Length: 315
Image: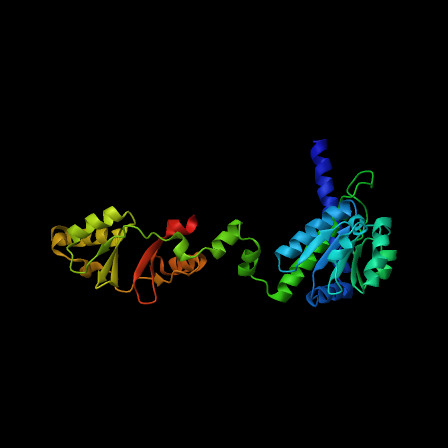
């Protein structure tokens, strides 16, 4: 049980550290958001050691949520990487102590280029805070480490402050799922938001029938199509749709007379249609709203291009 208690205490300590950040969200945070929003270049995140690892994650989060950013190690600046910086950029410098020597040696170069600095440290009286245009205080009462030495609560607090910045910027920019997908085309969300009807539609051997076709014949074509439906056309134009559900209900209703009936007797005359560039997220909304399992994909002149069913949207 002791082992679990150690883990639980660690999580409690880090949770307390996060809640302790709330009073630190002040006018400096407002200024940081303003600087980033008005930045015409990119956000350069920098830090050494554990702060560097956290900085890299913050840069990645900013980049994926609409704020161009990348991480740079201040040690590399002395070996040519200064060339990536321009006066249109903003630097987000991270150091728990605010006194990290390697980072402080980097600051004069930034100031010489008139690049504004957003400092993030646990020491508002530090040199980093002094030379920053605004300072985000991420101080914690203690580390979760039992020796109070290993960066634990402090790195969690820094990461959370970076997330808070990213979220605030997303809200100010009105960043939406569609925007997120543009930066994550390979992810599951990106695929769902960028995939269109023409990407997933069935277009081969579509079960096309005519309104005057007897239902006995229509059943065969619907079965061969393996989509659970038949599309009624006249002169190449869509005039209706029947589903296997329509067929079952018709058989129950008419029994022996079923085979005397035609497609026009049971077809839906206004099937749900979409264009080839309709996003599958929109198609899913249509399916949920109208309780249908398939939609027809048509061209501008109402020519049938394909069928998107519920299963296609899940792939």
